[in-house]
Length: 271
Image (tube, rainbow, N blue to C red; front, top):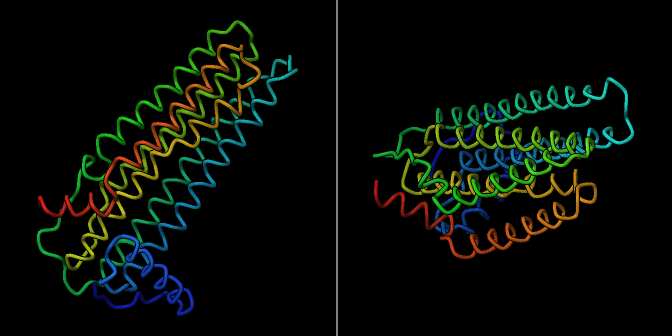
């Protein structure tokens, strides 16, 4: 994995990123590969973009909780204003996520421009290779379960519970849209590689990013934050069962599926 250093990376940051890149290669059974500025810059931008994406989701949860708090004891005719504000915030968060994806693509493009050559027979892995059927089924089932909880809360006669259910629906649809945007970016972005090792690293990064996206932190936490204790007892019991079953399925999925490095090598072997 050889390449020229990126022109605008400052030396201290580059040294730290190279060290982290070497640790990343060792964790994925690529200890024989030398960490390069190209790999270090791609991993660094993904760490920062992932942190920013977590902040976006945290803002969504906090905003939903604030809107939910406004539903209590507010008989005024302007009760729908918080929902409109939440919808506007969601639009802003979607824009912020699209800018994050553009930032990652831009770094990849600039990194690819420094390559003196490209790896022969580049692959463009599809969703089966990047995400895999088990993780896709888990993501769909998690979303469906959360939507069932929100829909059942809408059927409760209490107007406060119904308004909280609307907030929950907005939050769930928003996070689903954000995840869909990120998955589309993962599948559509060009491969940046100059040899077999950097090609394997590229696929590993895609698989790790896709699996990280399927961790349903918002889908698990938002129903509990908004409605637990306010909705009827049967709903609270159903939400706890949903959370426990989801945790068990998530642990089993991570324990029984191959590692990202193994998935990447399988994808390489069939190209």
